[in-house]
Length: 220
Image (cartoon, rainbow, N blue to C red; front, side):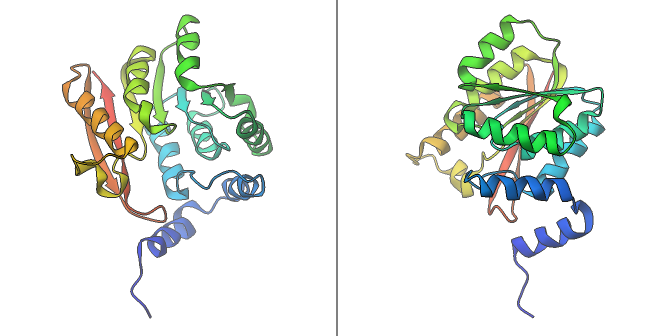
């Protein structure tokens, strides 16, 4: 037998601990619709659901819907009385996400807003919604620091903020990188380090999606 790699371990974890028909159907529907395969992994999706459940989150803000895969897991995590507000730039992606979420039976828990998140967030703030318990950011990476600033404005004290894809295959440690996504990740970490209203860390991950990681912060 060859030495197992990261993807093999992910598959083992999914087979034993995730095994979910609706989330698998969502991934297939996304692929059939031609959406890019940039969803969180299945194990990461389950983690998001458990995170929402373990923190008692009932109001979640998601920045970056794609086809609704992570949205599905978050909607499960908030329960039948919860609400996920998710922001998606592409109208076609939002249509696929809506179909996926309705088919999975969680559509009533999810509000999808279409448009650039950087434009949708001020509109949302002007509506003065109840504060969010959990904010998951997985959109255009160059705006991650801006999204965290909005998360601070919209989240309650004690809210959790998760920002995906910040390690960039190790690029986070490269202060000479010209990659806009790497530079944005470094800007994000610098913000997290200096913002007194946040306590944060970064967790590296390996798996089916390769080498990456997420920032994890709590609003003080």
